[in-house]
Length: 202
Length: 429
Image (tube, rainbow over all chains, first blue to last red; front, side, top):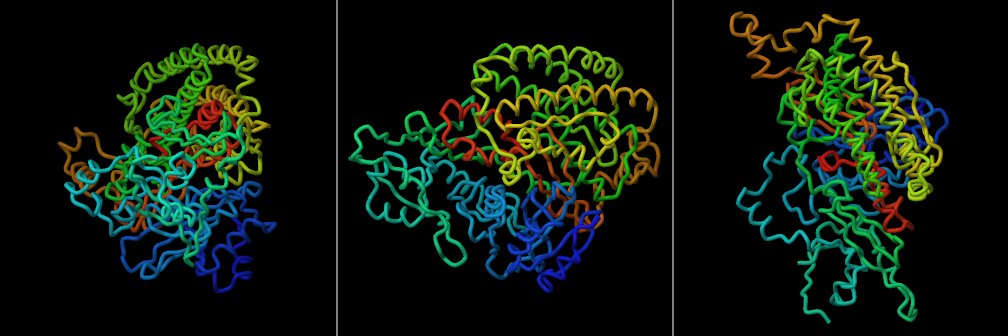
């Protein structure tokens, strides 16, 4: 399978950390700093044409020393080949990569899910907030390996929070701003809303 | 002035790495002109999560100007069960029951998708007969999933009769599925390296009878819908997606093909010897609801074709081995496990320790009824995966709902949402 790995190394040099073929899939490890550039190049260069973003996800390994990896599964529809791009992120530093929402609109929810489950921030994403868990979820990021299967809080605390919450009242600030309630909001809240903050009504 | 107290807790402030605000409050720009007496004040309508037309616990917040949608914000996660996290604590074979519960309208196809990925990771080559049976399972699932889609979408648009027809046909497949797996919903049909069970006596005749009469029902649906003025009026040019946008939004399955992209995993990266079956991939032109309907209808005819070919092959493979002949992967028969020392050891090792997979990772996409169901498995050499990721087709297809609904009528939101063909078990996982 030719996916132009050599061309990728020539073009981006040391930013291409490693390449391998595992179980027949070609994998390229890319430095986070130039990941967006590499992905844009893969999408737009004739001969690469990875125009279809199959999936974005992340992997947190059991070895706590090992970097968390953000995984992009790409596909070229005209060339009918696949490529996996992985971005290792050092867990001792803030987990940030550039959003590819500007390249593929399909990345919107996929990046939100990675943010929700792993706590990776995607800078440049237009609406980065939790997607599967609720917005005020405070236990952390469920798919990290340091997150216990049953959650960080005790069962009693989880039950207490569930009973105390009013799921009907959870509106994002965007929704509040278009609801009639907008005019009735306190001044400081409208100001915070204008700054782009979000929250919920109790 | 309301006396309601409003308190704000900031959850995720939406700042980028540099501390800049990444999100502008969209609503403010849309507010009506206060001086315009007849200018519409936007209205906020909450649909769901408990609403029959949202096809599950999906909540849509729709901003309306009159009857026209300015914006539609989907909220998901009400059915989140943490399957992917749970999978990290399970042996590979123990994950298969979890896959039933993701896309519960086509459980057998999910079982097959996971087993194929695990086998690719472990380098297991399955038998001919197993491949044919899995093709039958996948195509049966495609038919029942599309039939649910057809029936419920018909109901959403006010047509009740095709719902009864499609559920009648679906029942026939469910009976066959029940005879085969013992369950109507939680099939857990596959195992790594083979199947949970071979087809029972009378199954082939039953499926053959279904394949003979099923196209007649489809013809009736075709007569009822395809040139029906109401149906055409409600679906044509509604919720249209261009070819470029469909690719850009990562759509897959009938949603992508209705927009004119002939991408079908069965043709482009064949698995289970799909390249040896004769079938066509229907492709739409306009990418609207009508084309999605036509694509799904034609796919059912094509699935029927594949089923007939698979049944022919199955007859030729009568008596051929079903599971791989590897005692480390496939459980010995219970009678032998109780009488034969060797078999007992393998039984014990498999049940207690699972099947270790070599360190590595694999992505395998299969063409599920909803779209490309991807399974991404990462192994560190133990019997439990480090990461089991499902690429959920209806999650990704639903993400474009806001775009499809912009400018549509409120009644079209129901039609558009139905045309995406979602299943919340898979979206929320």
